[in-house]
Length: 286
Image 1 (cartoon, rainbow, N blue to C red):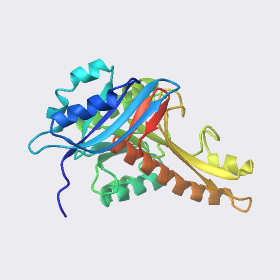
Image 2: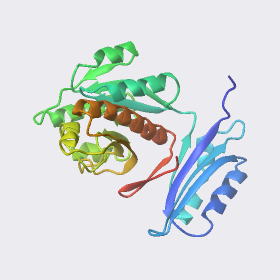
Image 3: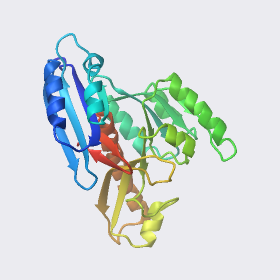
Image 4: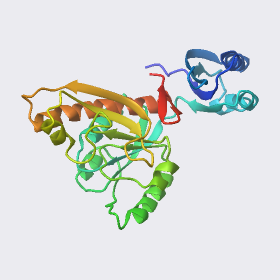
């Protein structure tokens, strides 16, 4: 296989005004970078502009070197801008409780190269999937969490994340509520999969709740975690049709597949720097 051409990714948001695309394009041209693809969105309601541009690097130059001279443009347009090295995989911790379908699905996608992440750590409040971690050669850390020890365990978790240089936390059916302090510290870097098409059927036994109400659609929602439970910016959603002939267990089985697909897409888009936060929502250049 040929080696991919080194390239960077620029994402930005700023007040909408004339000249943004021209300024970015001109700057990359002056840096001898070739634009590979570019997507943009101007939100007329909020007068905000969003851009994702992928660019090839000239030989011998790094993304950091290209970024170094961009500060004047960023100030001129009041940009919130980030440069990313596309070759660098997102270092990710997966957190799981007693449902392992999303964990196993993510690890398989990582193994076949379908997700641009690396997983140096799996964390759980149960021991159920220590064998899955071992089978994949990934360190496993058991951190049981209760209301009485949450602060202590979150402090231990923060130390682990720092030691492993983690960029992203995935809550793969991790059934514990993180504190507001922890969630705010990791704003825009915790992706959760919720077992419903939010905001329906929150809490325990969602498929039993759905079955009891005779629903015709079930779904899953991947979103960023905030201090407001299950109210964070939504990245991806999907629904599947169900019928009265299906049991709660049938619905749960269908839901597991949906959850795995939705979470994988959200993680992929985050790791490819396709998601830009916009207050309580996201702009997704998928």
